Image (tube, rainbow, N blue to C red; front, side):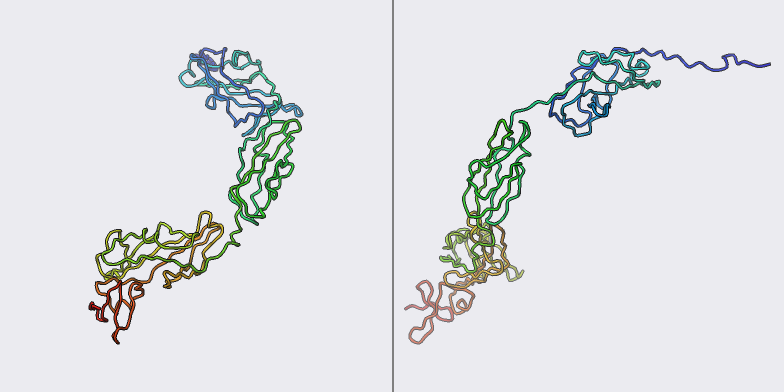
Length: 414
């Protein structure tokens, strides 16, 4: 005798009492045009305020294209530029969250009315995944055609500037086609003005060439045509300078009118530099200083602008430069430049910095001994351009600025 449990041999599944949503609306869906670029889930849709459903993937649809040869639909890989053909969107519609336990989708989306921009989508069989707290399924929009649109021929690159060039140095080749849009895309390029005789352009838009001579700024006009229309392109350069290897190398420099600091005088290193006579292609840089030797620290220390009140050892140091336009025609010798100031040889400038259109070096005066006495001690210093030794009546005197001193520094009246 068999026994039967009071609730039956098997429990019947609990009935799903959720409300089934059959009318679904998606608005403000945009459709691509020829030449548009898509990156995947790109099309954002909007929903009615009372919608219990939403679109997965942040509310975006995915673009699909029909392959006429294979007879299949496939999602567009990213990034994708829209061409001619048949397209549609697909997306995942979901009911979840707070609505998921009260509402659900039908077992198959063919039983739902899905509207996109007010247009009913094809009712295709698409089984829905149904769980106690959510449900979702995939739907597809109505198919649409994208046809090729021929846009006006246009150059989008503006004036193409080749920059500063050098004789004998080839330019960096450039593809004009990359900035040409529209037309039939059967582009052909040619020089129109031939202002830059060394500049070459191939029919498919590749610029190349090597400057052959020094010249100022020039502009070349290049024409691109698609067989029906044409557009002019401007190609320019700032200037063509001599090859850096062909510049005049400066190995010696002479300066004049060096206003040597004196005790009690105002000190302004920049003014000292600006008053010096020099070659027209040379200028002083911003690093111009007067230094005083500190015997305690055994270091040279910068003297701020003011008045020199203390005796001691001083020196003038400055950066000299050849740059701007002059830097294309002259350059300091990298290893050594002989420096002469008011006929006195200073230390040579060594380990100089040389670039393609600039060079700079540092000059430093000999040590300048400043003292209240002007005697033999100063004559033995590295430089004392204002003092000289003379012999008067068989005696050695020191003449400085019109005054005379004995060797021991005592003033002598003559």
